[in-house]
Image (cartoon, rainbow, N blue to C red; front, side, top):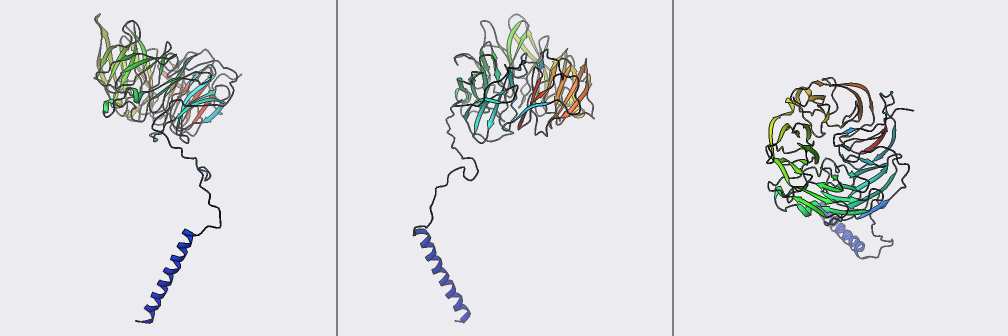
Length: 486
């Protein structure tokens, strides 16, 4: 055997012997140092608490601050007191802004999402998702200072899907009702956050194993709850088209049957009075319906049409008078006009016209505002030459605008919110610039604009309470003073 090969074999054998001896000592010898069990969190990462499949809605409560001065003004639910996204508060607001823009009174960080605020009695309520705790939270802040007063929360784990929370609480002097991302409903006391009752819509009304029995829609729940005469009105879909819950007790007062298997959409229930009959109008996945809101037939379907059934719908229906409702679809569906009639024997609904976004009024997610027989909206990205423009349509002609802002004046990606007070229209684009327009009949004159924040997806509806405008992007909530400077 050549000497070179023999030396290689000897070296290999010696290395194997040394490795075996060292490995044996490492396994069996008593170490000269202390072995300490690794404790979660010592590596500066949050401890990963296992989440049970059984969600205990509203299980935890944190009391954090003391309420200060109660400021006037309210925005108690989705689209405000009258469901029209118009503030009727008499508080005088600034006619324009200087180069510094409206003052930011306070600002706070939120978990990623698009849930808007509700305001009542000097408190701001917002639904939030804490990713670190894996928790759905109702958080209560002081309107004056932004101090967080309390939070009611519970563990529920799910994956990010274009953010988390989307819905706006409904609040009265006695109750706050929320619908969480996974369709968990809470009712709490608005002052101290005391839990009154809860409902897991997925467990109570879902039909396992069936596509049309699914409760929570894609991108999580977007339906904002309604409190009407101390009753929470909610549209689960699946086993019940709509339900009414006694806010005092949590008792189910009535359920609307759902023979067509309509499903929960991202729209919200809007009360309307049509031909003297008060009803709850809802654009579900699969169709649009009106459910009686008064009288002996409360909770019964008055009319329904499945002729308008876009796959995704976010903006809520708008009643334009004379028995006509305008409904909207997302992702290219456009809009439609539904005519409601009543011949004495009952109500009937017929889709009388429909169009794509390039052919008339459309909206991706924010519901148009009706003012003086005209609809105002920011058109979506697929609206052809009018994309991302602010536009105005007379209710008699949904195809041709009477005014638009022009191709030189587009607003983000057409996904930001807008809100009205008197003749002042406030528009927030996706990127955090706030615009102030003065409405002159059918024209909007730009008065001022200011970059409030380098925003990420500022899509949440705004709230206007007194002189305070509350806006947010995916991660931050700001309270602005838009009143006249003293």
